[in-house]
Image 1 (spheres, rainbow, N blue to C red):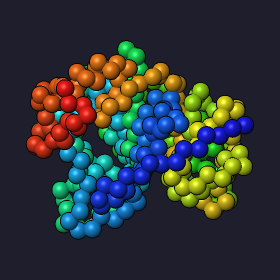
Image 2: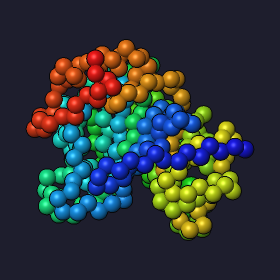
Image 3: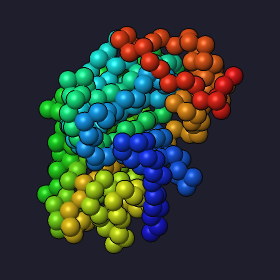
Image 4: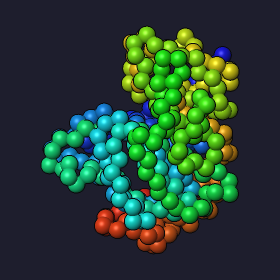
Length: 289
C-alpha cells in the first residue's frame, strides 16, 4: 500500500508565511481541489494587516476556513462579510468575480491572530461559466460528526453519513478534526481521490509517520488507520476527479483560450469592481496580452 506525501512550497509574504500544497509537481489536484494554501498561525503586530487587494477569478469556487482570527470579504456582487473560526465563506467565481480579503477595519491598530486554510475547487464541465455567487454559513450550520471518539466538522460535501449545507458543484468531502493524544480512527474511503493534511502536530497513517504541514494522498485501499500519539489537527479532502484544468494566476479553466480571454478582460478593466475597495492587483506580466 503506497502513500504519496507532499511537502509544502513556503512563501514568505512579509508579515507571515503561506504554505502551498496544491498544485504540486507530484499531484496537480485531489478530486476538484486544485489549490490548497495554509497561512499562519501568526500574530500580526500593530500596523501589520492581511490586505489582499481586489483580484479576479474564473472557473472555480473558493472556501476559507479559519482556526483563528477574522477576515473581511468584499466582492463585485456587493457582498461584505466577515468570517470567523468555524464559519464558511463560499464564493463561486463561475464566469467571473472580483474580491478582496482584508483585516477587518475595527481590528486595525491592534495585534491580530491569523490562522487558516484557503482552497480553490475547480468547477465541473458544464458549470465553469455559471453565474458568480457568494454564500456565508455560520458555525452552528456546519455539521459535527463522530467516528469513534473523534469529532469532525463537515465543512463541505458529504461523508460519514452526513451532508454539509454548503453549496457544492461536484461530489466531494472536506472535513476538519482535532485528535487528542493517543486517539485514532479508521477512515472509510468515500471517493476515488482523497488526502489528509496535517495542520498541526503529527499523525501516523497506516503506520507511516506524517509531520505537520504535509499532505498525504491516500492509496486506493478501502480503509486507512489514522493515529496521533501526541495529538494533531487535520483536514481531510477528496472527491471525484474533474479532468485536467489549467491554472494561471487566479484563473482556473479547462480551456487555455478562456484564461487568455479573462486575462485580457482584467487588463482592460472589463471586470466589475468591488464597491468600496478601489485598489486592485495588476495582471502579472506573464499574462499580459
